[in-house]
Image (tube, rainbow, N blue to C red; front, side, top):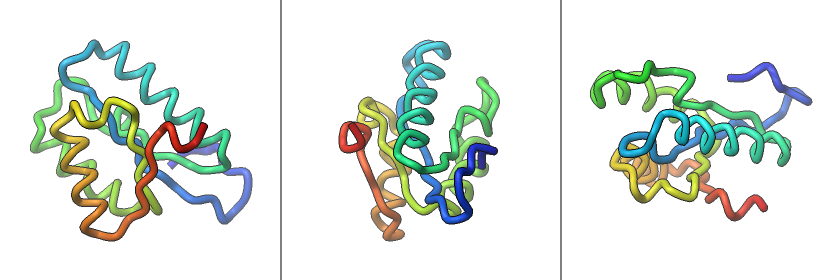
Length: 108
């Protein structure tokens, strides 16, 4: 959770997107764009890049990230999410659990 709360009833969205197969810098840029987009729309965020270290295994990452995602009101799918196995898993779990799903382009 961030310290960017504007009011006490702010929806919190988990950001899902590609991390593997691109540079860490590009991933950071993409997820930062997701943060800014959510904040501009009055929403709080959980950025998974802030929760796991760069060389974390997929199993270790999912042990941390799935509970974090399930604690959110929704999930924001970055434009590149379909190229990420982890983001596709997160999207399927969100859909199964009935968590609100929005795509990045829907917020522009």
